[in-house]
Image 1 (cartoon, one colour):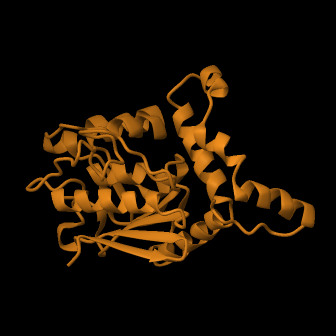
Image 2 (spheres, rainbow, N blue to C red):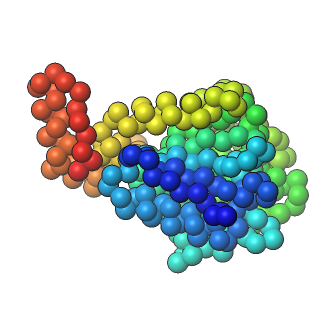
Length: 256
């Protein structure tokens, strides 16, 4: 059984964590498979959006596998390079939608926080168990939590392992939408269609600029140059946008 299920569907890549008997805890083999999946997604110009989910009924991901933890590959950080924990950060260029359910713990919480759009079922249970169990090593998730949640909510999770349910996560703006468990797949499809209706190159350029800009003060971010924005002017999609506007029709994106 593949520990990561990868499926290409039109312009969408679906990635599913597939160790339900271990609550999708990420071991070294899964981590390597994730790195391969992200590489395939960013390397294929016809893929415009990725969707990350977890198999099974109980958990999206219970974190890193304590008995077979990720070690990093080619210097990449855990989560296939996406998290920045324990190695080199290699963010995904394409938009990433993540759907979570059940337990979303530790490294699993970190992966969810790396998504651009995060949808939670109403049974999702976010937690940083490190303080409660007395284990901490490469704990990069604390840096995302403190940036994406209100200060005291994040610190309660960090220093007291206080859990956060899906409804509260939506209230604090951590997730884009909280839906009934039975509606999670439908909600993911709706967000997928919203992304696919947009210019893929503009979505990628905007994502790069927004995230890169966070590394700087606002005045510096405003004056920086962003490669994907600059290169967009020479693309077929830019010409299509102008032509579609002139012809008063919906644009037909080529992704090139």
